[in-house]
Image (cartoon, rainbow, N blue to C red; front, side):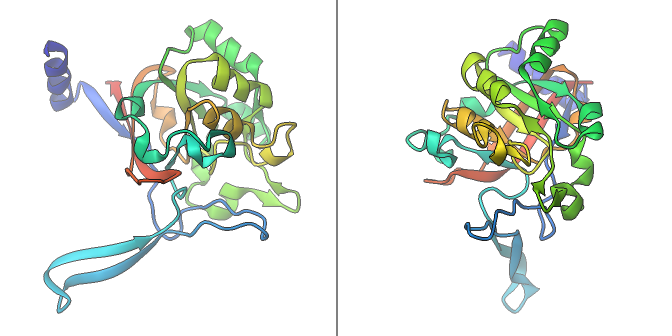
Length: 257
């Protein structure tokens, strides 16, 4: 109890700062565009019910319509075929939405090569410098890609060969999926796999190996530059959608100021 009281006092005093890692959710929020033969997710849309008018004189509210995987969102294990018999988003234990965060900063590499893939050697070098990735951690992959978050075309960075955005190698995805006891992977891009993830020897390896091992994804994060390499606490709060494969969510970080 004393620790919780101390945390509450530090939050009130500002000694512990709350950072919002969430992208704004609106009609221009970038979405994942699949080849036309596949089903497509919906852009975010607000539909006004009333606005202090004859439909509701004292209240303003809306319906909204969008896909589960729009904007900053949470990937549940059942989102991918490898995790189809595992938790839906409503079944994910609340205790597994909160954990320590480590930030792997590879902005320079992603700026030099938008198709940059984080490999096992990069993760091991990070651990040599900062210590082992702690149990129950969110692994946040910082690439600087959030700077394109208000420009859907630049965010997708697509040409005739498909999108060009950074991600992980098959081996790095396997490392996080099977050899590190983490909650999941958080990225700044539209999805947890590289733009060219379909062309790897195991297509979409992060989805395959994280979802298949009952781990999670967080996407379209912002403000990772404000987090330390280690020492932050991240809280991901998806909607509790029964049967859902994911949900837009508010992702917050606690850091010592």
